[in-house]
Image (tube, rainbow, N blue to C red; front, side, top):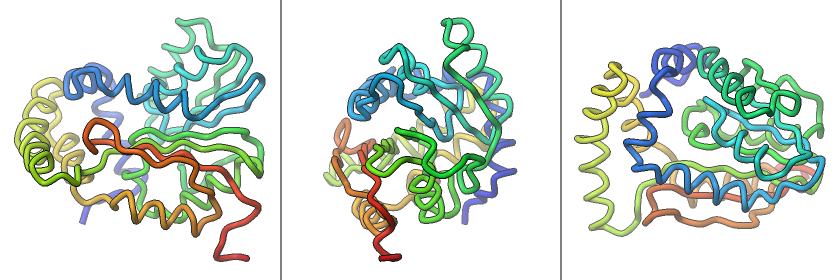
Length: 241
């Protein structure tokens, strides 16, 4: 059983923060950047929107939103102080400091008022949460009724040959390259295990519907290695109606 306590996850990402962007680019052959562009396009940020980036990491997704819409504002939240420091630096270097704010916090206890955000997003962070339904409840709480959310996460391909090939990469190559580039063996073994053990897209869709979201879009990316969900908040979760 993977240890997904917030303190454990935060410390792990603190350790690899200084090489995180480099390792991501190498391990994904820069495809992760394409996935983020697709996510931002589907989120459909509008002028003046208040956008929450959950598990913001080094801020890549937040920066893409800030680039795409010149009057929106973005708040990024993450468990790792070191990752947030990098995100803040990158945002300032690109001239976005007046429209971005980065805060240390837990996605299961978001420190924001109800309905304060028009849009919300999380990229490659939901599998690190130890209670997906509690996270979805928090996500539902902080966005406006009708507000849109995007969830981008790794998944396992359903096509058997592609799945076998990907599992070889995931279990044998990725941990070695991650350790070589970052100097941290545990973090990239955790990444492998967390992808293999994570819920299927079909189960996640069921969670989302039960927690009060309409599913606008659900699509595989790059043969099913990643999956994108686009959601809209309903009035209240189905289980509470």
